[in-house]
Length: 343
Ligand code: AMP
Ligand code: MG
Image (tube, rainbow, N blue to C red; front, top):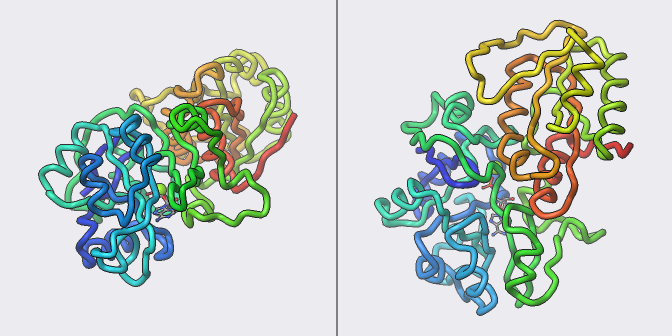
């Protein structure tokens, strides 16, 4: 069954039931070597599944649980070897999180078991931030979708490896490096930013969060980004999409006049689907550059919207990398398959 968390909608299965977990991988089309996050009720529930739960990790859990922080710890030897991932694989470590969404907590409580819950989308697609996204991706394959309405964060949790006495960010999220450093009193780094280090979080190696269109992320100040994107799309014959920001909306309207249509989220009555003609441009303002939280909350819905409008080429304005902006950029760049330009 699919259910809301504060990050994105999850597809849940009893993490201790091999048959249920195998089905979860099959429904999502998730590669078997990509392990799962186990959702538990509280720190005690997490400690019960861990081989050891180091003091610095407890400190972080006390500060940020329930919330969008996943801790990777050594697994309890009492658990079957596969628990934490696909039943055909062996997991030495386990990723644990206590979500803060009341529906998610109620579900874990009622189930009485840890719930393995990856995002409730087809593997590789943008994560679902609305029950309708789950329906679109997995509608025929899941028994229940618990509709919890709007989601507060909109991006997946921060994944932090706390094994071996360290703290390394495997995936940036709403609990930022600064927030982790503040609690631990030491700088916390991101594994992916250390050159030469191969991904330790298997899920980070796949093209992810991606719309069907060819996508490019454009980084720079608002005017430079808008000018670059306008130039590119003027010369483009395929239906285009612009992921704009509040700061650049006016610029595009002036430049493209009636060739551009600004859409809103959610799809407030404008039921256009596959409606873009060659040379036409759909624009969505993802949010405010000064407030990356707004972009985080809307990003996946925007990418899905471009798909439903039939955009074949998307230009997305990047945001600054401080705070939550870092996680926004991580997802945008992966959605674009690494296609980034600096202007
Ligand atoms: P998702 O559930 O789709 O949001 O993805 C969960 C993320 O956590 C993926 O990037 C996984 O590779 C990562 N992950 C889950 N378990 C582990 C683990 N034991 N060690 C490292 N990364 C993990
Ligand atoms: Mg996912």
